[in-house]
Length: 426
Ligand code: PA5
Image 1 (tube, rainbow, N blue to C red):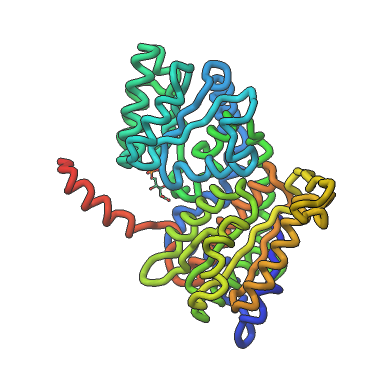
Image 2 (image 1 turned 90 degrees about the vertical axis):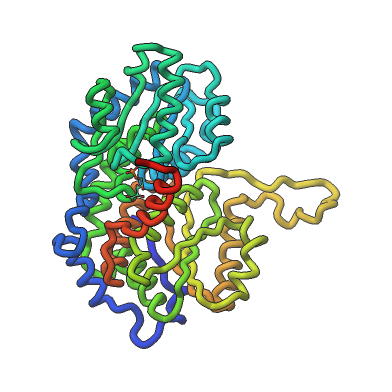
């Protein structure tokens, strides 16, 4: 389980602090599936449901891809993209493709409409053997759909009729253009369950197939997630989910409308992107919702630090730390000490970073930014699974506390209507 520490937030609490009776009600609504959107709460038992036949099928597809491909193009956007990228960057590395390894490179496409980004992936693929995993629950989202057309054409030109065996589709069980194409073409299919929405789908084939291709132990991710979902279901103030959801909602009621998630690890960048979508799309509706932002330290201390310390006091900060990063890099000793850094000689970077984090937290609290601290034990499969379950539970409970449906996204349609009109879609 992750640990939540509210020491740096308590002095900003008013009256009796977070209303745990409301947290408890929201938790009951979620667990008993009686709230709005309850038909989309299948993610709570998704890990245990996926262990078994589905896990075997995903592993077997991943092993085919690993055998016959030097690269995998993963096409998807939003919930059909961010989770897989988050896992690969968190557990493996943001530089995964550049590292010496036995597994295929992974390119993410279809998460935008930039012609140069897509052309660059085509160039990077070169004439290497590759496969495609196209992911879309609706099967009709424009960005991944056009990217799929582009990469499918390249694949078909390269392999002719054998291209079929290199296309893996993750979509709805019965509906949608992508589903229909996959059935008629005989492409291998994985299902996004009906009761799981896009941004809660990382522990289905959506996230698991790319993770497995990247060499992540998805059996371990799932078994850890299955037990974490149970642990985070505890109905008490010992549950870190209660502490986090309760604190952020309490602070929101007191005018803290922006939550900055911050971390000292570039490995965490895409987990933060995934978190932004999870919370932003789940909570921001009906005129309410905490605005989710991300800051990466210490880089952003030199860009956003001034605002955080001194700008309008609408911020709360949630700092995510990883107990063991696995790196023992130390600052070297230098004869003559010309740069004046010998006071740090022999110190591990990890310890320096922790000390800096303490200094930053003290400064931000003094600058009246409430500080919630989240600690993850390790940067591995267990740590990732734990973070996913923790944030998903916290998000759904938090959204129910503020009275909104955590599982719909009616506002996303507005731009799509205009876009299709301007693009003259029939
Ligand atoms: O959470 C959601 O439902 C969305 O963010 C979707 O994941 C995103 O819009 C992609 O949709 P689709 O998987 O249908 O292509």
